[in-house]
Image 1 (cartoon, rainbow, N blue to C red):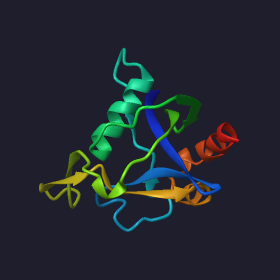
Image 2 (cartoon, rainbow, N blue to C red; image 1 turned 135 degrees about the horizontal axis):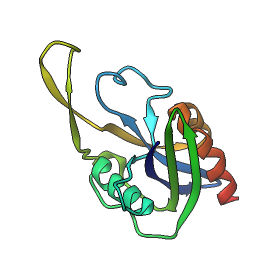
Image 3 (cartoon, one colour; image 1 turned 180 degrees about the vertical axis):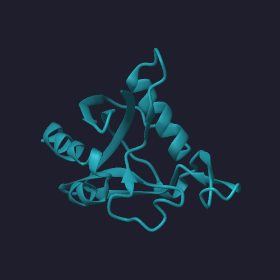
Amino acid sequence: MSESAGLALHRRSGTDIEVLIGHMGGPYFANKHEGGWTFPKGLVEPGEDPCATAEREFAEELGAAAPAGDTHDLGVIETHGKSIRLFARSGDFDPDMIESNRFELEWPPRSGRFSTFPELDRAAWVSLEDAAQLLARNQRGFVDRLRTALS
């Protein structure tokens, strides 16, 4: 089973809680809004601490180091042969400053042509309610966990 780790950066906006999520880049998600968003996350390398993975992936996918702060483990969700561990941290980040790393993909399929795409093509602060609708289904359970951890 592959293991991924990510970071849910959150902040208070008045009485509401907002979380930073990113829209997945590439042609498969170009026109997908609901279900096309993710927490910055990626595969845990052999021997790597999952929290270190979460911080590394935040920097790679958003283009800046994660803000320092207390980190809370929101646990693991297992789905479709994948294990995702998410950590939560309070902090701020300007989503307009995103500078994601890129991946290469044959596009269109079987065309022999390869293009590069950003892992995340944009980021946004959204309410927990909106995050529960926008995130990929395998990550939506973390929204309730975050809400519980912050209450």
